Amino acid sequence: MSALAKPKRYRNWEGVDPRPRVITIGTFDGVHLGHRFLLAETVKRARALDVLAMAVTFEPIPAMVLRPDAFPGRICSAEEKIQRLAIAGLDEITTLAFSRSLSELSPEAFLEEMHRCAQPIELWVGEAFALGRNRSGDLPRLQEIGARLGFNVHAVKRLADDGGIVSSSAIRRAVQEGDVAFAERLLGRPFRVTGPVIHGAHLGRTIGYPTANVQPAPELVPLADGIYASRTTIPNVVTDHPAMTYVGTRPTVNTGARLVETHLLDFDDDLYGRPLNVDLLQRLREDATFEGLNALVAQLVRDEAATREYFSGQGATPTTHSSFD
Image (cartoon, rainbow, N blue to C red):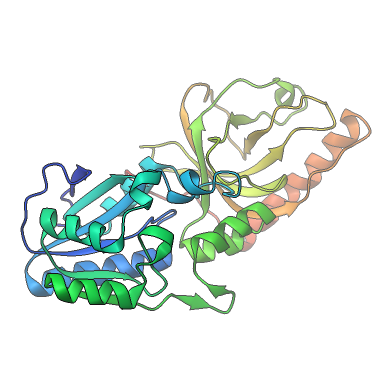
């Protein structure tokens, strides 16, 4: 498939014709560096064998169905996940509707259905991958089932750096703790909050720091409260803007609403109602309560200076982005 071609998308195997394929399976939340390595191996093998490359994923994320009280939240939306899978060079993406009944399937039943619908000649997974009831379909069992059905099962080692294994759970922990710089290392890009700019209390403009406010999607893993250096982009606009972003409930003015409030540096335009991407780069400080607006403004001046110093150290200039970003 050419780099510009869009992969075909299927839902629950509907419309998939049984043709030879190399398939990879995963939740792929965040499409982080480890996922991208697995996807690249899948595409490379498919090209070598001159067959189709397919990714199979699940929505909702299984943990949202099986452990909703313990699941901290998604790294990216389902839509963004599919968009990021679509730029990995795949020919096809199949999304399976995840449910408790699907989770109760045996590994044999799942792979037999996949084989009947999609005719894999190879299956590529991460080394810690497992599927089926009680995660009983670990790598040795998948390889055994695959051999019986007539396809090989290969595993790729999990990526690691000096911070540990690259995993979605490690990224979620980093975001919750405010370590967005570490999350960026594992993702290969900054953690992003996206949404339309909404009206807030309009306090920022009166104190010299107008903000573009975005309500984080409730299913996303929550960011730690505080002030962040960030970059903002307006979809389909080719420049980005250095910014400082506040995450929290604004205890000094007691509004109670939890928002992502972003002050774009050296920018003055009306963004209300427009979609905005906010990429969190570095947490500069924790949230705090101040004795009145004067103390708050004085701290914001210091925060702006710290933000500008961060970008000065990064050699920040407006940069161009793809149409996806």
